[in-house]
Length: 350
Ligand SMILES: [Ca+2]
Image (cartoon, rainbow, N blue to C red):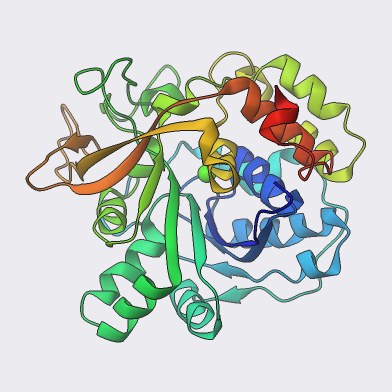
């Protein structure tokens, strides 16, 4: 691992509880440089809160360079429809799960994610890996613009090496074992959506994801099929809490908060942090190439919008994560949070 060259990452996040877990991993990893964080208001957090929370979150690392990582506002609404997370979920994210930041980040945040991303690609003399853990809206805008802007199209093809996106699920009719959707899981006893086949990141903006798939850039989709292998357990929270570090302590507070704690060992999984691990160590995850399209049609009675459909004739190539090595992933994650990413090799995890 020490021979691994630096991976330049651009993150797009909806600043949910597991986004903090994913971004912590990247910022703690010796082989990763996070070059910018765009925040989407299409997901857990509302946009203004998300930008402020992510900026202040960076003060936990006690590192001036990390504190200066650009934090940039994206969009308030999806490219298609207006589906949203439950109000309570969004409020908890806005209030950063009542976990305290050490201080206010004095570096100014920015607006205009599309312009920021374009400039960042233009000015860099290296390629980027993109981590999308908040749906496809922000980059979907960029790819949509590129359809009528040849210079932007070329810039994206030249400078973006690959996209790792947390999202989606392949249903049992397509693969064994399959993964069902997770829309109703988050809606309690009175679900206001009928959709049983989609995953939230794609459901919230099916067009955004379709634009990402059609971008021509290699996409690795960290789907529920793989994250279902790694529930977040009490044992994991206990191990995290034993790491004597402000970031690990912050994450422990988040996972212990009143809205998150009830799901530990029950319905919460290693979603976004698994996608972060896919950035540095994709070998812990089994990917299989599919040609996929995203169902765009909304039907309020029997909704399938956001469903991933394998379609060899009309689909775009996507490498879908079907399973993951739970022990390796958790060991690597915890070692990295403890500041030992360089030693956390496959050999040591055995
Ligand atoms: Ca997320």
